[in-house]
Image 1 (cartoon, rainbow, N blue to C red):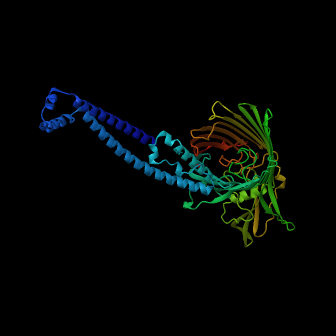
Image 2 (image 1 turned 90 degrees about the vertical axis):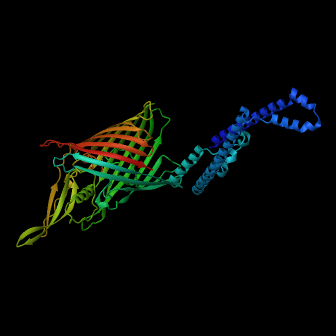
Image 3 (image 1 turned 30 degrees about the vertical axis):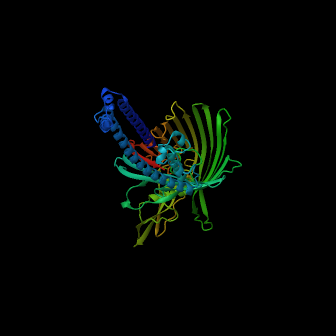
Length: 588
């Protein structure tokens, strides 16, 4: 607007100067015509004084400009143009005054927000808004005027948005994901075929409390009894959906020794893993310690870290008459991490860990109760444990059925209770991961290769600890069942993944392919990747395509194709179960 008005003012000045010049030229021409003597005027000058009025009248008539003269016509047109330009200039000045007033109000609002957030303003906003008169000032008069450009204002607004996400020591973030998920194939009876709508909502708060302590918490949607998924399936007659605490933690990094980090609560994984062993939506609970050293000055090895963790997952009271103290079930583990710079364009990471599930049987009992179909089964002792896929580890379950006796004959009442469930295996998982990152000529197209191998070193080691069924009584009949026979040779799992591209900035693409092969006792199958055909005893393919629509909006497609392994099977293998996931993700 300022440039436009300045241009208009220059045009007006030029038009006015041109009009004055033409008017002066016309006046000089007329004056010269009056000053030149002629025969008629010479004769008239010899007349008496009585003829002077007539001579003066004749002279005035001769000096009057001709209205049809081209010069007069052009002067008139210029005068009309100048008047029109002046009127238009006045209108634009009024518009500029109105826009200046609105802009001043906006700056006042920004200044108020900056004052509340403690952001120092560079200059007085009202002083930086130009007035209408300043637009037509000479260059020398405007050299000292500070004019705030739209880019400056955009930067200030952007800074305010960043500060709103970081209020004091707190930072806020989250995401919303909408998913359409058709599933078909698999069992011949089509029992898994469906098409469901799902959503995920997460909200995160983190805080840097001081130079040593930080912390935060997260809220997430999903079934509170399923630790491996934050998805919420649409349905349940429009009922309200649950929101649970997904993280709540404090971490300590002493500034005197920043290589050490201690974290406690419910937190994200402090060790590196794939979903071969741990689902990405699961957040463990307990404490963890990390000792990391950056070695940037060495030629190849750039970082080495040691991670330890102690992760209790339940407590169960003893059943002995003399000892009924609670017994904790805990994951003890650790990982050694190294990162290498093999070439300017090639990085390599090696991660070796061990996860020891101490006293894992309460997981089997919780899973068995969650699977019970009898609505009268009393869920005493443990909260039922849900899972995103079918657990395939070998489990022996003990069930008590109430009976009544009539005429010496016992009849079941239909009320059953699961009294015990135990794994045939213990779980001591030795996990080794290798990752290669390749830098290409374009930052938009990095390449990564990830390989993961896991082995359960204690497959079928718990069979001798499975308790026998109690003796029957007059009112209760006990029975035992085993879902699958345990084979200690089926203890390995494999994960191979290739990635091309990235999903970070607007216009980015990423392509991913993963191959999974998991034997029955290789992992604890209710904590690994929840979207595959089943937790173990499975072969699976995954293909993904990601497109970054905006910096905070992402579209993705995932195809999962899996079926059970058919070791020693007498029947043909099951068809592949096909699961498609079409996602829209908005982050904030």
